[in-house]
Image (cartoon, rainbow, N blue to C red; front, side):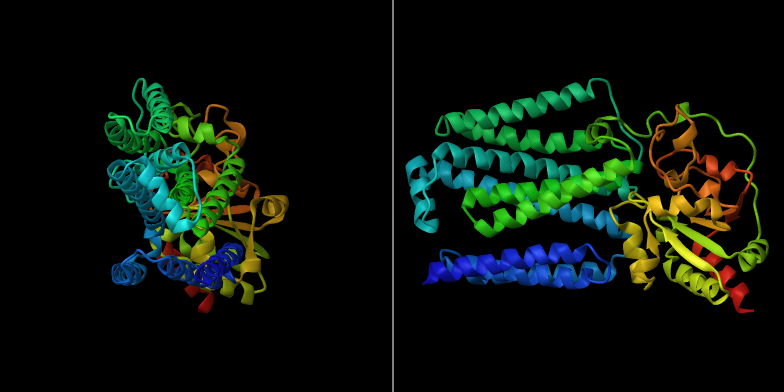
Length: 474
């Protein structure tokens, strides 16, 4: 009877996870999806406790402590810090899987092969081959370690604790391939001779190699590719969780890990397609390292005043707002919503153009605009907006750089050449809101700033947008 109840709770948990991920795909249902997924995880924890053999007080303490930390972090972290927080979440997920793998190997090493397999069978009712269990442990450690340190480097780059530029050295790719090959060979050797005297040392080496691979894999990736990296590391954390589920023969952990891993990989492929690049190019291309080779922009940047921009916007019949990371830094999303309402009250049609890799994490701009209650119907993807951009009176670019850079279309020497962009340069008038004259996070100069129809509005984006909205309120 207990076994039936446990499996039933696991099935319900898996169903809740599936619906949760589905609802996370829409801004209107995202909160519901997050909550229902949390309920699914709570049911999974309860079902696991029903197996017995665990100290429920220790588990309850862990759940309580984690909940308190989560509440404090959710309340204190600003929206600008959300990409870094997501990177840390991925990293801690990988670390948890690595610790599960290490703990299981410790049990195996001290209990002996036959005793370990028998204990698994007694707990789960399933007998697994010893080689399968050991290889699963090895792969869990490998993927978990890569996810942990890779996510820490991504966090450091996103939070500007270290440079966002690619860090490349001679022989780096060769070293990465050698470490990965050696790790896979070590995992295979453990599966072939799990009880050998040298197996403990090999596991320690596997842990060290996985942590080093994660660092070396992420260092050469530039800031402009961080949204793809965040998505890929999220997929890795799911794969690590699924592998951990195979170790302890926990069905719901396998299902949850596969869901996260598959959805993360799908999102990664979507974002790579939006950049017209392969995953291999993102991981090994060193984006931004050759930024100095791009064609130098000609002309000059033409500044404009808020008053000048107001008169143009007041006469505009159609406006497209293109947000980027600068909007997040300035926390300008609420001011942008206010300006959009002012424009609509003036009879202007307003759209928001969202590039798949705008910001520093997948869906960054969607999250910010949803926080400001911008109607989801106004958020449009790149292709439909580009189709009507030549008819748009004004395009307002708020802190975006690479996703509107015309060099992607006409400069073969540019690192982003071939990347699909939002064609802001085709609008009749373009206003670019920027804090200064420097380059964006990726280090690339934006040719759009020198376009004859572009005018620069320098200063804090929130203050500038609020001033524009105030002009309409006079």
